[in-house]
Image (cartoon, rainbow, N blue to C red):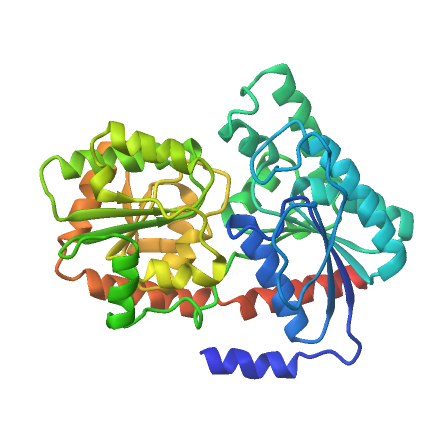
Length: 407
């Protein structure tokens, strides 16, 4: 399968490269979520010969081989990285000015606006310069703001941002979306015509994210993480936040460690690392938890290889869940809350806990760890990732949408 896709990539290289201006209203690159989608899309487009310029916030990590152009930062919030914030309004204004300058310099053939703010900036620029636009949405703007407790559902601010979201999606000439659920919501809740919405799923590089041998190098990494021998490891890698279910994961860990001492929870990511270390201590499971903090995307496969099972207790019903694909590609049996996006990726191979029920989450984790056939389940998940979620497949679909928009 992999070699066939690579051969097709060579065939698809264009006679004339496209100049693509991506607008990414985030601190790209930051080793999580939407950043991975932006990164892998750009890498694929470059691999087949196109030129990609990414306009983004001042903060973020540069990536070799990518043309990243950063806006000026706001002087009163120089350390902004993730989450909803009132400061993003000023950041988006500065990003819009940076994108305007780069429209003039790059003269792109097409504009690719990521997330709703990038789509809004792209709408303005595409009309000013008469360039086709593709909007890449990974969830609901207002849904995410409610999940982050930035808005109260049904309040005046929520209604205002809901109208803004509706204006953006109805004005966008073509929308890419990372989940089938969001594609349905765009049509049913926001009145988008189905022909304007293209489902381009998040994917995973299955050559990079692949099972590792449990050799001396693996043992050394486990030792470096401070994980005692003889313990089964539950691994999580992503943002650490309430809406991601981190609190629930720790409560589940406490419930399990109360009656067995052979478990260890490797909980990697950021922000709020110290907060969750303190919570683990209060729950009495600090000795059974390791919090390595932010993990570089390039180092993620090695860290995930330590796990016996993986978990994703994310409770959002509108956002994507790209971490599931990394778990699948690593051959990790995966426990997730029962939300539509989890079913979309894991299908019948997922282990599902009732959404928001940390006690059921604990039960499912224990059941999966003690399942003799869990290795076979992990193998089948990896096969699913290879067959259905390779970036070359999504990359070719993006190029098809570009071609349609360019006429």
